[in-house]
Image (cartoon, rainbow, N blue to C red):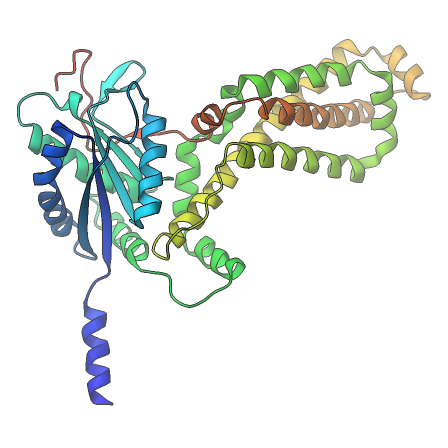
Length: 373
């Protein structure tokens, strides 16, 4: 009995191991990765001793150039899930840009993937700069966007988050119970992921969905049959139609672009749950933002275009402001359904780019227009 207790204490003193995959393109990135793996594990271990660090190196071009950061992130994410890593960094010789300016790296906390671009490192001190940027990318991947690595309180929070990420889920919990546990324990992380994605800009980036939504809204607004339906539906039915339209376009975007993941290994189970929750929240908030904008536009359009005498005649009773509200509500719901049809015409790449925003790595210096640091 005493021996078992001692063994348990020894096991508890051993920190969980966090596995970082280092995917390097053939050539210069692969050569740099060979020496960088050990240094990266050592540097991360000295900065964050709360967990053990293991860096696994793989040589893989992932994509055929020319390629953008979204393609690199998606391909690296596939390798992460297949290899059962906790985080992944991609070393590439593909130039990366933000607002047409070259940058050293991008971090996507939602995917657990960072991309480091060698062309922006310059010719001198490349290995040192690559190490500093890689460490900064890893910290960005586990941060919620507000953490300051130099602040003791934020460092403690970051350490706990690293321990959670490195700890394998225990127990044969069913999916619903496990998801609830992950959600309750990672609300701040999820909110940071969603905020980094800027979901309110989702609809603006999807031109076909936005065009279809506006076209459907205009048609609904000038149709006398829609006027009478809005008047007869009542608030409860209008609410159900509104919720159904939001769900329709959200499901269309997530399923159509294959943004819902299934865990391929036990280690990434929690990460996949976080990814799916953040994806669903991002798309839902984006669709709700679209719905609210359509409602405001429909209300203004109804007040200016649907004149009161004609509106009253179509309704069969004097029109009140509440009737305009009901018309705007049904019109925005129908317009959102039209947006779902338009979203089905969007390419998978366009939907993913609209839903996911990749931010520059915190420690990665921004290069000038020539690529010099």
